Image (cartoon, rainbow, N blue to C red; front, side):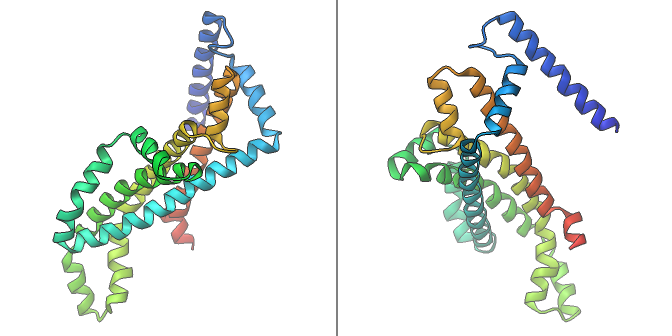
Length: 246
């Protein structure tokens, strides 16, 4: 109850600050009022195109998240077990980490169909995070646990699921929880830079072109809301509590 009270107080405080900025500026085209943005958001929620845009953007981000996670795990297993491959792929990991997201988006526009740009961008954002953390988790597994497993007659298959997976899981979960938010933001940014069809990024791009600031704020609020929901969903799926119940 205390946490809820503090959260509500914080929300009302910043909404009040926003309203004060709106009054000080005195131009809706620059800073719309919180009430007008909330009204516009409810109007958008009543339109089928809004939910279509959300589903399109969500499908692209989730696809990129899935592909990036699978590739990250695969590369982590390879580089954790083979030093030659670690030395070979290590520069690639650093290059991906250091390259700005905008550069990836511009290159993707040159290389791919426009509808695949957000997926590609999300993959490149997720890949290094999952790769590095999963590799770290694999390397942190205590070899003595495997020796103990052999003493108890565990097969390699059983050792993998009873020793390796539980040891790596905290590292993987931390990477995934961090990657979800980054993938969502990168995917939407790619849609804004390369708008195509119905999507959240295309709607943001259009609202900027037509100076519909209330729409820009409303769509931004939707981005934040769905980002939080997606992160909570991933956290719920990968949480220890969920697994214990299962």
